[in-house]
Length: 234
Image (cartoon, rainbow, N blue to C red; front, side):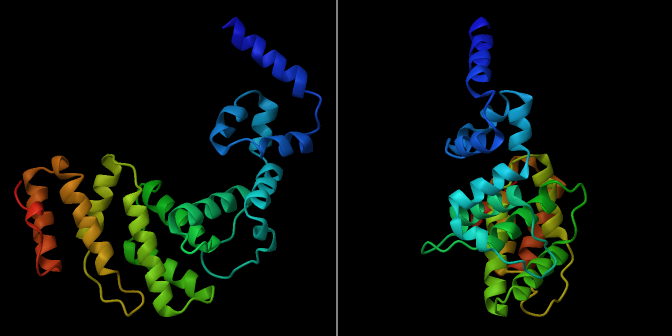
């Protein structure tokens, strides 16, 4: 305990008189895995990590072209630097192909994940899917590309959701939504629908009671011509 107090005192002595802009230049050169620990050192550092200046500097350092970002139209608004940093990070580490990083893909992923995970009563999947499609089309993507990207985002969000009771009930809600005809590209992807059922019958099989299991199985048989044998058997 004494060593911890001494360490904090030493940090305050060395860094306490540095202006914020120098602290920011130091912080953004520290590995991102250590940022949470740094933000807990004292209240002043916590305020720096909660402010716009640090994240703007970190954003430009990590992705220099982010400074040339243009505002986009569409239903998902552009955000401040912390959100933009998260969007670029997601785009680079989950979706980037051939070195291409698209900020709006990261923003859309974060939007969908938050709507599904944080909302006690998330909007219907058709509404969320339509919002994503509208966003991509407003940003100049073709209808085919918008549908492709929306499917990729749904799959990535489903695969990266926390395994808990909320996710189980959410996935059940998704598969039990009534079928509504929507014109292309607003129609929901076959791959996405399959992945939701697959998650339920593999990762959440032990969460079902007998009635729920057979209800969901009937939904699967109604949607798909063939279902794998691994889904069968309560």
